[in-house]
Image 1 (cartoon, rainbow, N blue to C red):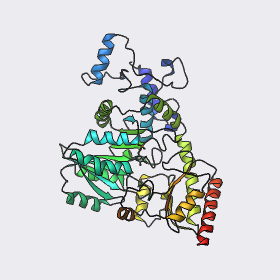
Image 2: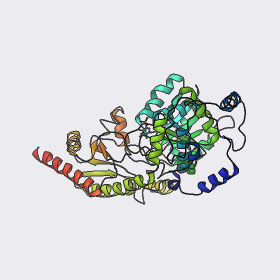
Image 3: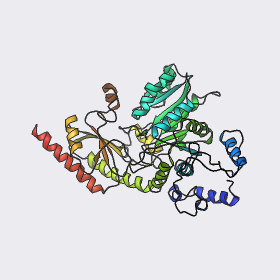
Image 4: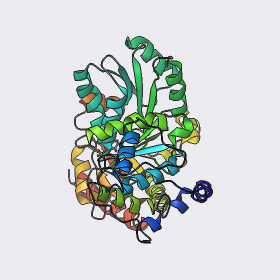
Length: 434
Ligand SMILES: *Cc1c(COP(=O)(O)O)cnc(C)c1O
């Protein structure tokens, strides 16, 4: 398929519009699908070539034997390599983060594993931050060492001096190849400075070895934080969370430059861990309401966080919108986040028993891990999402048996408060009985 000059001009105009205006149409050509307004689900494993010559040409492009002509689009071959639902979805995802290229995966972990397999080789080292998502920590601590890849770990929120001192003292200074950051940290909402790490990555890169900075932007992206604007090379997502947004799909995303995405997509082709066409279609449906969902979730979260802050049975609230100006975290917040987000943790006064009683008393808010969906969820990090973190490390991170994590959805905010209030009352009666 070769696009016309007119198509190119149309695409340019669209590039200047806001992502939310483009989520319903960008990258989709109704004339190629019988005029259907919505992009159909291309539920097919393989694609018919018009001629043998065309098939040969598509393969030459796919295997890098020939360069594409200007305006030429990649020919469809086989769904493990490419599929319209995935390509249109990838094009739409690039708009939010202002990335050149995107790749969608069967899960967030598939995206993270594929980044590791693409950019790390035996003898290399990776720097990452704790707390990180459990699967990510497991990959860096337990899986990669089996392939001769070392990891160096730092506390979330570390500043430049601490980061450089850790690299200098690690013994892996000359082997550092990947910096993997999750900010804000889960569940404490601790922020780490993305542009500071971009400078560190630059400093430790050499002509022969680029240090890639990858940011897991699941908690705030793609609407509230844009790591590429702050110097990140790659952005990864569990699209299972805010991007999917309805708790009905598992998927992952990686975005970045064409140069870095090319080997990543090649690796995905051979690992075979792309998302399915049906998942791609569901995520396009989700992207149409991303901004409206996330805006409502953030409004609700602020309301809930403010309510918790003043509550006599709450000892501490961990919420980005409450960071005080004198806190060094405030600078980072102003620089790289444009919302307090929809994730809140708080310490209830009491112990695990009290925390569990509170969780068991919630009715509207569901007791489940995961996050970012239209419905509000509550969980107990110490015994659930972070249960494999050794107790000393939990303590260091600030995760205690008193902590409860909330992911705030799009419900009526007063109903959320009354659900929390009822659970606090139930807890009060138990605490009183003792
Ligand atoms: C859920 C999550 C992941 C893993 O994503 P899956 O889609 O479950 O594989 C990675 N990082 C963060 C921050 C997450 O919340």
